[in-house]
Image 1 (spheres, rainbow, N blue to C red):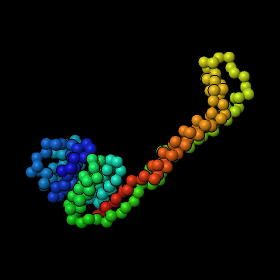
Image 2: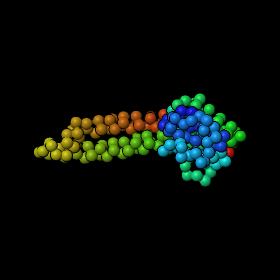
Image 3: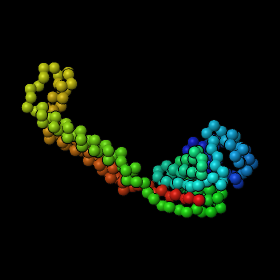
Length: 196
């Protein structure tokens, strides 16, 4: 059995299983089958040897491993504590299947890995443009009497920053987000797919 985030994952002679229970008897783990799934605990999962279709191993910071089954909606997805644990788990599943499987190496898509930061950079650029237009349009107007209203705060911001200050602050925020997106795009994790 391998310790993973949230429980244990192991291989018997007939199946791959995930359990949250630490007190399972060792002699029953070797021959664990579909009839024993109820003993794995509340969140226990079991995939018979013949039903294992694919292993997806992502070499990211959490060493995500997903074992997919043919015709079952219940996949087993875990986060390992190290690359060695992830590789040992893959080797155990390959030994259970009796074959190494077909390996396909890919990386995460660009939008999946850095899309959030690209979207935030675009939003920051749009908000900067809108605020810049607003500051320019409010620059020639007289200040309202009440400085506690929303209009008063907007006029105070326009007077404080001015058009150049708005562009500098908004541009700096947009630049930081764009650089973070670029960093994420360059460091996309490797994904190994083993199909059986």
